[in-house]
Image (cartoon, rainbow, N blue to C red; front, side, top):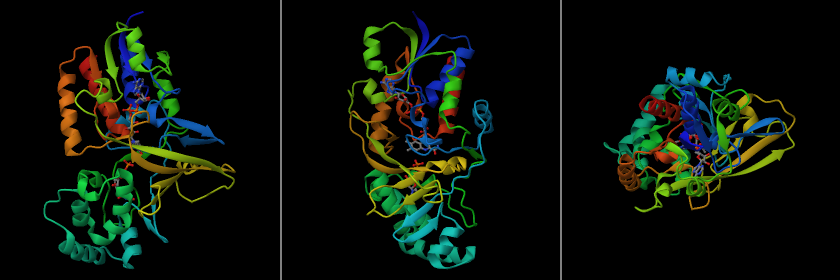
Length: 365
Ligand code: FAD
Ligand code: UDP
């Protein structure tokens, strides 16, 4: 049987593309090496709670087209992400806002906060920040950097902040109003019922084969499709011939607890270096759950090694220039396209994945 498209990966990128391709009358086969669909947005029901198996996922976007697009497949609740940071025995609101500053310095007004930060910036900041540490010190000063950024970031990325790109920290809002919304985006929420049903709807009526690794499958089915969309790791696809790109991975220790409410919030970040995990997720709070039990996941970050799931591309200069070389190889291909977080080696959020997939749809279909 011959297909128009072989789509490798049932994550959001592969699923959006498959849905649109089928709508355009193309015959698609979707494969995934995992035993379930939905890639990293997969949710598993435990004790009536949707557990975000590969890490907390909050949908947020400022792109109305993307918001309307995803709303075709699910209804979203009004969840607003407002993580809490635990530093030793202190508790702060995130992102960095007046609630954080007020707790840090016992002050009340934006002017008082600005004065303190300005003084610290003058002492520690630089005019043109070249790495994450310089960026953080120049943006927020020493206290915020040392209590809320340094330990967390070095745990998450396994590198000193001086060796990390400045842009990572620019993802976070920094504001002088009392507003704990972690995102600046106009639209935000959690799909009622979790993310897996979204992908299931996208893949409805399309042939899907799970527990099927591309590299084994293609050996036996070399001519299965006219074009392949590959959403796995681009360096793995090319047999690491130019060298291996670096990734970070996360490991979750998930526990069911016999209590109704463990930490009072979906996300608590542990920002000191000494606590080995980066954060604890209490999944029920994403959907305002009232179940008698609760499920929590401690999240540990580590360097990726072959054989485990890669999660985050490490977009520093070295990796980006290696990726550019793989991209050159990819640009010469006629029958294979790369997409998604791993195929494009980009630190994409879900909305950007949808945008990129729809862009590809325009080019291809
Ligand atoms: P994936 O979901 O990784 O899908 C790729 C699929 O390809 C996988 O199912 C994999 O098994 C399959 N595959 C790979 N290689 C092969 C092969 N050789 N053969 C067969 N199948 C293969 N985004 C947000 O917008 N909000 C958030 O709050 C958020 N939180 C996140 C938290 C964490 C811990 C992480 C890691 C990411 C987070 N993201 C978040 C980003 C989000 O997960 C991604 O943007 C999105 O899931 C990427 O979709 P994808 O299809 O590109 O990749
Ligand atoms: N960050 C931090 N302290 C926190 C939360 C985040 O220093 O309490 C930094 C950290 O470097 C992280 C970056 O901000 O990599 C972006 O955070 P975000 O929550 O967007 O990361 P995600 O896990 O969603 O990729």
